Image (cartoon, rainbow, N blue to C red; front, side, top):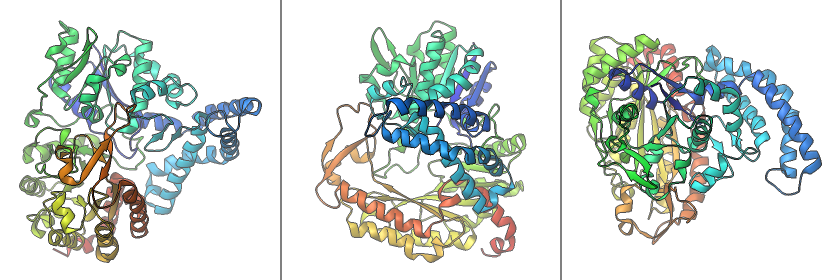
Length: 591
């Protein structure tokens, strides 16, 4: 039986995503050879950013203009005067953009990527081009990393409407005209679709629908972290089983392998771990949920991914040292659900894998996707990299731990770490304690200062509006970034403010009253909601927090360089690597 694994739009175009390469490598290790994997996200974007596709769109724009000239209505929405205006504007922009779009893509693939003005211009051109393309399907809007529909992605009814909407869903045309036949012609017995971000829900399930309609005998399974967080919702909502046979939740390696075995054998799906399926009209969830033994896992396999099509001149490969988080106490964090417990690979094995990947795919650039690296194994990892004299260049996420010493940071820098991502969330002492961050202002100050001294870039995530937070407390966090000139002017610094979202699986939901939440609400129609509306007893209301968040975002944007560092961690890594090559003595003298 042929197995086909697909990663749908929309995701960031700078680098591949790790899920399918991990699954593919695991199937390799199990001796399954008849398989393929495709990153449809980058394939589809590459198709859209072409003159050939532009000419297809032009015909649709002209036809849509003709239709609307005779039938448009006032107001907004599809078929409205506003829609007509967007089409007119798109046709006006079209002649300039169609001549620019392929050169813009070529620039991002080559040395002009490192010219920040040209880089900025190319991203702007691509955004304008996608706006032109989207106008055919108004009010839907495609961007490089997302898509905006008039339908709610948190409602199964809306999702099913969206995946059948010929007027507003651009993926129906794109899949049918450019991808569906090549998927079906491989004659797979099983297709796995990885949906790991909300931006992939409608494009991913649109793909599932078209596959099942083209060949109902193909077994379609959906995996990824989105539906891992919706296990309880899927128990009560079976509409989505119209477009997929089942869902694999949590980790998928053993589950996928066992699903393959059952499809080739007795089809006893009760034996497939982490599977949610429908049998005799009833939704069944196979429990207990299984966690993988990372020590037995091979390095990811990126064969089949078009590494030369990502919008970057060098390949940056995601890799993984560990799964889960060794620190699970942060009250706001639902990420720990994706991986039920913390496990890590042996550092020696990780360096073996990095060496093999670097040689096979001709790149020294790696992006550790771990939720946070543990310090002692990281020390061993770096020592082994230095012992072997490997020229790896990488970024990773860590915590502002007391034991993250200047000596360890120096070791990391010498082993090729160019940037560290930190979840700061707040700089206010009370909020640090209330969020159960387990960090202190003193350690934040010291670690940030050490990183800058050593030439390691810093990224800080910040949360605005955690329950009971006051405006003054949120401003203290903002001012930590604004007033810390040493940090905010350092090369590679980035900071991403986020508005607090009450997520369904976060620890705070175990005791909402204890966190000052007095009422929790969810619209009845949103049966796939990942979060909740809420009211608080004290501190900023959600509405006040949203208003202040906009202010914080604007003020931080004044001191933070958005491109490339806030736009893409992978792009930022390449820029820092180039900068360090050009200023080598500056980054080796300080220790």
